[in-house]
Image (cartoon, rainbow over all chains, first blue to last red; front, side, top):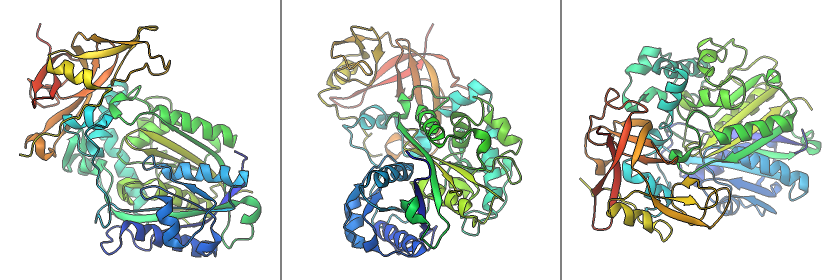
Length: 379
Length: 135
C-alpha cells in the first residue's frame, strides 16, 4: 500500500452505547453510518464503496440507499474492520471507488435482530471442539493461556493488572461502560468464569456500533475534519479452531499482520505514540505487545506492571479503556479504530499529547484472524 | 438435562468417528513427509499432497493447556469441567475433556501424562476423552 495515500475523513460511534434495547443490529449500523456521514459532511449518495461484517454489505447499501461500485463483506470476527480499512485503501488506490463507508453494529447485550453463536455440528468446530463443552469466547479464547503462563511465569495477578490499568484509562472516558477504579484483589475476587479467568478479566457485553469513511488523501484535505492518514496495514488468519493454534504462547496471525503493517509504514516501534490492542480478554494485550514486537516473548507482563502502558507511561495502550471497560458489542475492532482516529485528531477524552502515530491491532475469532492499521496525522 | 451436543461426521471425517466407535484413535499422515495431522482431511496441509494414510495413534498424550468452565453448558451438567487441549505423542493436538480425576487446578497439572479412553454417547458417536496415565 502507498503510505498516506488514503485517509479517514469521517468517524463516529453510535449515538448511544451500552444498553440499547430499542435499536436492532441493522439500525445500529445505520445510526453509526449517519453519524459518520454527518462528521464528514456527506450524504449516503456520496458513498460509492461499502464494507461491513455481521450483516451483508448488500443489506447495508440498500438500507442506506447507496449504489456502490465496491462492496467488501470480509467477516473474520472482531478485526474485520481493520481488514476493511486495508482493502478500502487498496480499492481507492486502484480506482475501484472513491469514498468507502465501513460500518459496525451489534446488539451484543439486548440481542435485537441478532443471530446466535451456534456452529453447525458438521463444521470442524462442531465436530472437534463443541462436543467438549465449549460455550462462547470465555471458554475458547482463554484455553491457550495456561500454557503461556507456565512458559513465561505469568501469574493471575499479572492478568488482573491488565484490567486494573485499563480501568484507569476508562475513568477518563465519559462514554466508558465501567469507570470506577478497581484493584488486583477486586479482579481476583470477581466471579469465576473459566479458570483462570475471572469476570473482570473478560470483556463487556454491550450494544453499539461505529463507522468510518475513507477517501484519497488528495480529496481528504477538502473535508471538515482533520484527515487521519493510513500509514501501513497488515492482515492474516491462522485457524478457526483455537485448539489448532500452532503455538499457544504466541499468535501467528498477530505476528504476520503486525510485521506487514510496520513494514508498509516504514516505522520502528520507537516511533509509535499510541497503541490499541483488541482486548477481548486480559491476556490479549500481553500477546499483542509481544507479537507486535514491542516486548520480547514473556516480557509484556513486566512492561505492563512497570506502568509503561498506563497514564503517563511511554506507550499509552487502550486509552478508551478497551473491551474490558469501554465497551464490547462482540466485534470490538471498530471501537479500537475509533479511538485511534480520535487520538490522531487530537480529540480523545484521554488524549495523548502530541501523538503523531497510532497503531491499532485487532483480533478476530479466538486467535483466528488479525488485522493491523497504522495511522498518522502528518500528511 | 438436554442431550449432549454431538458431532455430525462428514465424508472427510467419517473414518475418525468410526475409529472412536471401535475404540481406536485414528490420525492421518502424509506418506511423503510422514508428518501426522489433525483434524481429518483427505490431503496433507502445507504440502497439499493427497498421498495420505490413516493410522492408529498410541493414545498417549500430555496436558497442553485448559480452562475450567464454571458456567457449565446446559448439556454438560451442573459442575465445573475442564476443557482441555492435549498434545498427542504423534505431534498433533486435540481438544478433549479430562476424565477420571477432579476438575481442579491441583489435579490438572500441565504436561501430566494422559491416555485416551472412549465413551459411547449415542449409537453413532463415541467421544475420545483422556485420563491420567496409569503406570
